[in-house]
Image (cartoon, rainbow, N blue to C red; front, side):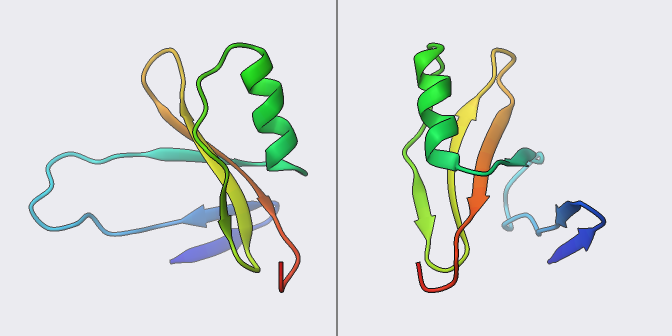
Length: 80
């Protein structure tokens, strides 16, 4: 499920059966995910590939120095 709470989106999901522990992903919205990915790469951050969800978002994942999974996304126009 996804909820818009003011300027923040809250996404809730269920754990696949048989999986122990929770995996939390902090997703941060930016104006242009591809540009932010290149900026982070330039700083030496190991980033994943840009993923495109047609008509919804572009996003990529990476891990911070403490092992937390983070994701950067940007909205894309419908039909893109």
